[in-house]
Amino acid sequence: MLNSAVRNLLVVSLLTFLAVAQSTTELKLPGPAVQKLMLGTWYIRVQYEASPELPKGDVGIGEEKWYPGPGGLSLIEEYREKNSKGEISGLGVAWWDAKLGAYHVLWCDSTDAVGCTIPNGLARWEGEQLALNVDQEMSGKKMKFREAFSEITSASFKQTLSMGESDRDLKPFVTIWATRKPDQSATAK
Image (spheres, rainbow, N blue to C red):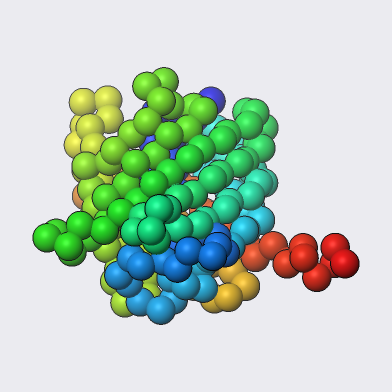
């Protein structure tokens, strides 16, 4: 499977994006109107860059579902991916902290040995891009992780996970392209 830093970052990243699946409950989290575009179910293509754990890189495919939590005050994500190493499933929850002006994240997935992770960073909107910045120790080194959701439209979005020893050294190691799943109700009639 993926190394723990990559796995944790992927888990965190998938959770932090404040987009939700279509539901009768309205999303009440603060943020730009663009986050409403993210409501729904998405096909995903995951590109892993070459690394010591994956010398040739890898590609995964799967699905993400985003929907409001109780009262629309939190966000829930369901994640499923298949890649050459196997299957990953996850469940995430994000919620707004008005005092900090940012979102907290909880992520649980099938590759996390302890079950769930709460990253030490917070997710914030930077214009119409949502970014999570996390400081983490890895093999005795302090590392920076950044996950950014960008190019958000009603039909697609891009999610980029990067890491490095400093903000200047950040290099992408996972890129996720999401495409909205067509509405099944129209074809089911």
